[in-house]
Amino acid sequence: MRVDVWSDVTCPWCFIGLANLGEALQRFDHEDDVDVVLHSFQLDPGAPKRDEQALDERLAKKYSTTISEIRARQAQIVSLGAERGIDFRFDKAIGGNTFDAHRLLHLARLRGCQIELKHRLGRAYFTDGDPIGEPETLRRAALEVGLDPDEVEAVLSGDAFAEEVRADLDAARQIGVAGVPFFVVDGRLGVSGAQPAESLLEILDQGWLTRDPVPVTVVAEGDNCGPDGCEI
Image (cartoon, rainbow, N blue to C red; front, side, top):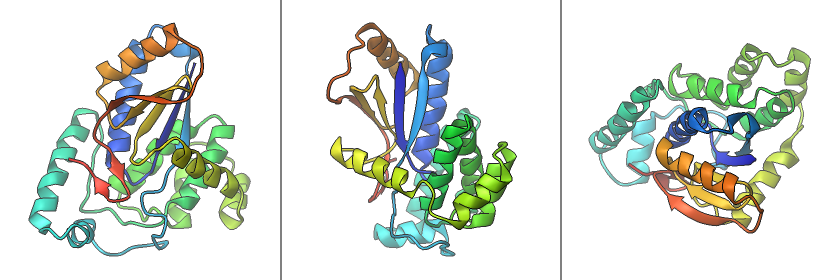
């Protein structure tokens, strides 16, 4: 059975959602028969390669609120992340365009380390404070998960997998993905937001018992990130 996941590497709820999915799969009787496929989604496709403005300042300006309010909301996500072993350091995050990160994730899919690269990129952005749009950040993360240096250079210096990223973005629009993470179980059961592990396990069980791909139906919604920001 396949689980498709749309997400972005600058989305905190996506990493919480992936952690919850990982826990659900560990408890799923057919874990070895599940293929998790990550798909590209960009929260800010117009972002520059590097954005030096502090994340809390950028969000406060965007939502016409105070930095204190943004930090209070972030603190809630930090707490949820800590419960799952994720060290969110929003104070260190350096924003940037994630298109190239998604291109590398497509290469990683072919080489069998897509999930590993996803988590490594999340650590780079959310924990280490590495600029997520810069080639050196992407190169270092890719090499650390075992990708071939020559293949990584070829991707970063060219436009390999650009069409695959665009196809993912188009597919998201076609099935109505407005925020991420967004999970599709067995090609038909849509799950929006960072659902708890228990809920994801129930949907995995449902998908396994009723496998018969049809158009996607959203069966659950939860906290997510969209073009207008992340829910708290």
